[in-house]
Image 1 (cartoon, helix red, strand yellow):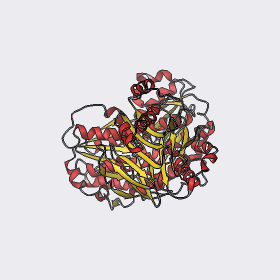
Image 2 (tube, protein in one colour):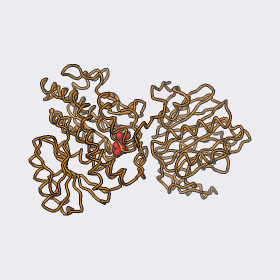
Image 3 (cartoon, rainbow, N blue to C red):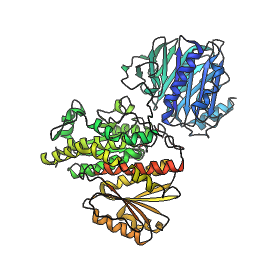
Length: 614
Ligand code: F6R
């Protein structure tokens, strides 16, 4: 999704500035985008700009002209289209009257009203974006005699919605002003310069020192020195932080795609997520941080909020929570954030997110606090994310950076972390010590079980060929494996563009069975548990209608392949971790179908890694 980098560098000239901004853009690429651009302010008080639809590497061909001259201030942007198609005209930076250039993340909700007023005032629009109004508004303030700082402050006061802005002015070559409300903006502090970025990894090639702007803050960077003002315009100090993040690029090694690499990293990722968190037959509650014991003692109800794959992880966890006697509800964050409800006593809100920057999840967390949830815990993969900063308690998944847009190792590590939380709360409810030991034993065996599931790669690649020319697929699961079926279907649609839907297997005869014929592949998730006999019947219902079945079942479950039924046996594991292990072959299936179809697996069309707009 959209990304911002801006910088004032006191040394190195325009070439160094272009390199710094260009590397920042490359580091923002993983978020997903469809156009990119850069603008520099020269000592001659002119703004020069390059922008293009497509990839950053394509933009790089246009950056030669920007390298000439003495510019030391610039802004750059990756745009994920919301208002207006991905085109050069809609790409940022937007320039108004040659005087002001602006990059903007988020959505300006009152853009239509501002556009009308600005059109009447004589401003000419050259894009369909909601954000061009920001450039015009700041420009109007500069024309009224304000300096860039005053102009951004005055303009920001007129904007509604969630946004982060970076602005430069032709008349002030050493100045860069940033502002945020709703979307993150970070200030990087380097020797002889300062930067603004929307995401910490985008500044690690320059510095590890940074601070996070708070809601309504404006930062004024002049010749590399910076001052932060709050929404009321008072100068404020924000906490200086040092990033411990990995500054290097993630190497692909011998893999063809990051998604493939990340699928195969899951044994290690799960082991890292468990590292230092188990002792004998117990979990170590220290992992949740100071005060968590008192928190867990008062929790009587868990409300999970999340989006997409993270939501499916929470759906699996609901089964675990409830089976340990902990009442739990799971809700899509974008729905929860607009819904009022009564908050039960002892309610804990648990936000689950890989990136920690998903705006719906962040807003759902803020909404939860507003409506009376006293305690918030997050399960997140990015230590330096907004979600981690805003939560009272944090359990990090140690999956390592996930680059592929389709989430894989994030999901299995979220499940691992959620099971640790289930044990912490469950031992205060109906989870007996012996049952805790069994769960811990299952967790200890998990990395090996995941590694064994990955050995199914060749078998899954062979069956994937049958899906490549299909337009639709059905996925079936039951109980805690129904969300696994949902996740398998999501993976298939995201990267192969085959329409796939998952149903609780018992629901099939209530409608979806009408879709089944010999051209409809049906993927069934059939672990060897108390629901096996039920799903076997559902498989027969499909077979009786000519449906072609691919059944992922547990070793020893007694489902045999034959006419119209292909069986892939998944390593047998304990009931609790079974959803984690069954996920692996479903990821492999989606991956192999997509490789056969030749899609852009790591950057599927229309999708973004961090979804920072509503
Ligand atoms: C699917 C996928 C998305 C994310 C969703 C939430 O493969 O990646 O559905 O799971 O956008 O993202 P996070 O977990 O970063 O909040």
